[in-house]
Amino acid sequence: MAKNVEKEKQLAAKAAVKFIKDNQVVGLGTGSSANYAIKEIGEIVKNGLKILAVPTSNKTKFLAESFNIPLIDINSITAIDITIDGADEFTSDLFLIKGGGGALLKEKIVASITKEEIIIVDSTKKVDILGKFKLPIEVIPFASNYVLNKIQLLKGLGKIRFVSDNPFITDEGNYIIDIDFGVINDPVLLSDKLNSIEGIVAHGLFIKLASKVIMGSNGSTMIFV
Ligand code: 5RP
Image 1 (cartoon, rainbow, N blue to C red):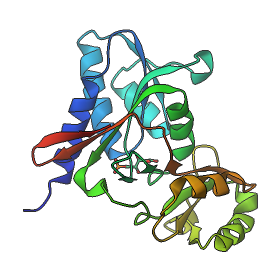
Image 2 (image 1 turned 90 degrees about the vertical axis):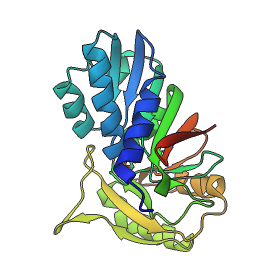
Image 3 (image 1 turned 90 degrees about the horizontal axis):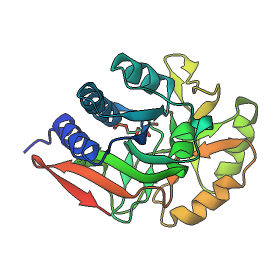
């Protein structure tokens, strides 16, 4: 039977939003799955739940504002209670690839100060080993060629992301390069290697940042912890 991917995302979003409690600071992810959660959060805020939210992209900020979700500047807080975000791939031990929507930098910062990071996905995102989805890496435009050459030495092949005829520009004015590393057997090692390349602002490997993944599947949800 064909998977109803949108339904699975909605189910995961609804399940995740139930973890939000009154007076919490809530991180809002970016992407189509996160958008379902933001819509649900808009509903519970309308019904009286008091939260303050930190968006992970300009798109998410506009969407949250359209639902009258109160926002707070991340620089005025030291921690986020709970964040709901999507992912492009995940494994059962909660390693993730993120950044398909190009918002990985703020998503990673928000995840890093979040106490409970809940990832919501449809069932197509589950993999045994990461690497089918090309790894998004945010680079300073000045360093893009240097970074591509360095990454080739790590056996990664990729190119700058384009939209129509122009490079995709992130909220922070950077480029995204999408890299095919083949099967990523050791995401921790690859993450460490990428972290040491000058010019990389953030990469889409999320290691030990997710607290749980809620996956929509067969009209229900499964939770990976
Ligand atoms: C954006 C992301 C998204 O969470 C990821 O691309 C998944 O998106 P979607 O929920 O639309 O499948 O990392 O930078």
